[in-house]
Amino acid sequence: MSNTYGEWLKAQREAAGVTQQELATAAVMTRSHISHIEAGRRLPSKVDAQRLDKALNTGNVLSSFLPDSDGAVAEHFESAHALEQQAVELREFALSFVPGILQTERYARAVLSPSYPPVRGKECDRLVVTRLERAKILEDPVSPVVWALLDEAVLGRPIGGPDVMAEQIMHIVRLAESGRIRVHVLPRSLGFHPLLESMLTLMWFDDQPPVAYSEGVRMGKVHDSPAMVQELQGRYDLALSDALPLKESLALLRATAKDYGHHD
Image (cartoon, rainbow, N blue to C red; front, side):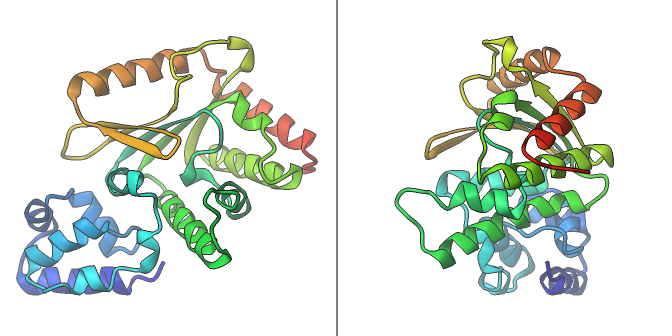
């Protein structure tokens, strides 16, 4: 992603004589998110851009020149998208398909193309670009810390066909082998587990309480109630305790990719 936007933000902040933390406080954001935006690693949501404009007295410049791809997310995901970009730790649970930030371009296209109502080619392209932009948070070698818990059903559903699946699975393997993410598979033989109802993302931040995000068909909800977040964290921990260890999970991923036709 071009860093022109981040460089301009930094220039305006320094001209105003405020620190990243002071700007973060005024814009109701985290300091780490300001740092990532200025470095060109992330983009603010539309609401955050409006807050930055107000805090820096820059009219609507930061809102108006926000790259178009930021708007190409489902309405029910907008709040979670903004939080995802600020999180210092993410724990993903995938029930049916690979989490968005781990998807390859071809896998993302296969997920997004057969929608209803149908989307035109250019609109699908825009959705794919947005999903890939989300994945750029992994370009930072340290933050956010990412754990991925995958139901084995995710591996068995050939989204996009064998070649796309093999590529997608090996992408996850490479991320795990490099130490950038940690991945565990919940075996199909487990039967019922406490996360079987929907996908789930747990998020932690530098300077605000943790939240959780759950999603179903055309609906999603950010949970910020401490009691609910604690319950969902407990469910995740319980499911994780039944998952395959990292080494065995990677072995299963490699074997599945091989079954789909991948050859080292």
